[in-house]
Image (cartoon, rainbow, N blue to C red; front, side, top):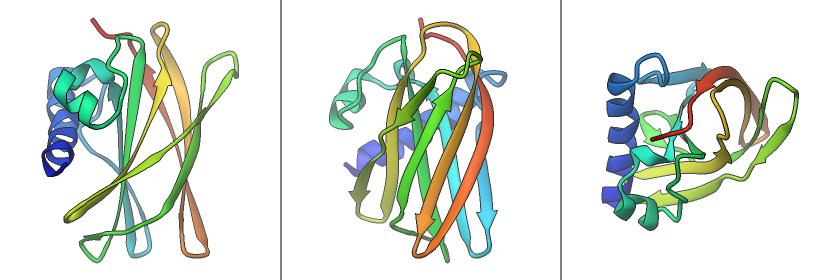
Length: 144
């Protein structure tokens, strides 16, 4: 599983280099002493082995969102939830799954990508009693 975490991080960064207009290499929000890193990309950026290990569907019509919560330089457990909305306001609930490995905790979810369009994401990250919300827009493209 450590290989999976490393690959997901690498996929996010390399995908950003390969498609700068599609994926930003690093996205983060800082809430006091908690930093939330997040990224979204098409699941075809994952190799079949990594997608299988992460229990993700690898398809040109599936996106992946990856969220990591850090406090004091260490991964922090959190409750992560969210939605993704298209231009017609059709909303899909994101079902995040926690993946825990030595030295890493991250949350992954998938969503459909049927056509090229800009989507609005709302991600809620709860640590203790505090809930922080991240809103961002992302132009998405079905994969090859």
